[in-house]
Image 1: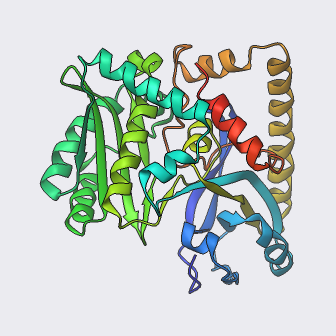
Image 2: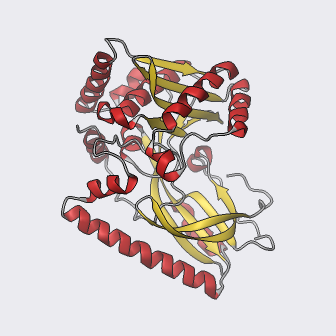
Length: 351
């Protein structure tokens, strides 16, 4: 995140959620600041700009947790509310694709190859993955990807599928004209069934939008497409990282080679209304988390989450969207040794 003059505040909701369903939302006028991966992996410090008149506070996204203490000290009387804790995953694109695969356990490599092989068999013996890069290609990609996105729970439930509208289509073409966009589609019997859109910024391919047809989720189309896209990005030999952006998830853990522990922090002016809002929000989500722990203890949490999403029980866990800005606060996962990270990779591939 580059230092500079404060941005204009925008209205953002503080959501009260159960799973991914929003029950209520309280708006606040906030200045938003976010860290890109280059900033996360660097050593540059952060100075908070003064709040402009009319702003209720500031939202810091993907703040490295190691910098939370200095930011809190600099907040100068503002109410500090840690909204989320999560590892921000990334994959190094240096070296070769074979080197990258070598970082997986033998079990994970075997499972990935089996998933690809099964999809090849499903599609008549040949995997049909197509890459899109030029403005004209991106136009075709957008039309086909939108057809898939309309079927996903992200769009139906959350409104967070591949954006619809001329403004996004125009921006897509402009990015492609600067060679700052990649699109990937997986086809089955001539029809698109999964898409991945990755903008390119500062040498990083960014996990922006991933979706798939839920009707074939059992065949892991998102996993197959991600693996094929990684191979193509390695082959270009011009990108440093693949940034899986904010939020935790099996898909991100599987394909990553590293992570930075991050927090989303809400800084609000010290008014009674804001104090009550933070306390209410924190207590509400603590109750939701407690209920989730009970559901997990009785073995029904996954089924309940899928019911809340309105998706079938075979939905593939791909975290098909980059932003989890409205998600409830979560606890930071424990430090993971290399062997634990490998077990997580293996577990995320379990059929």
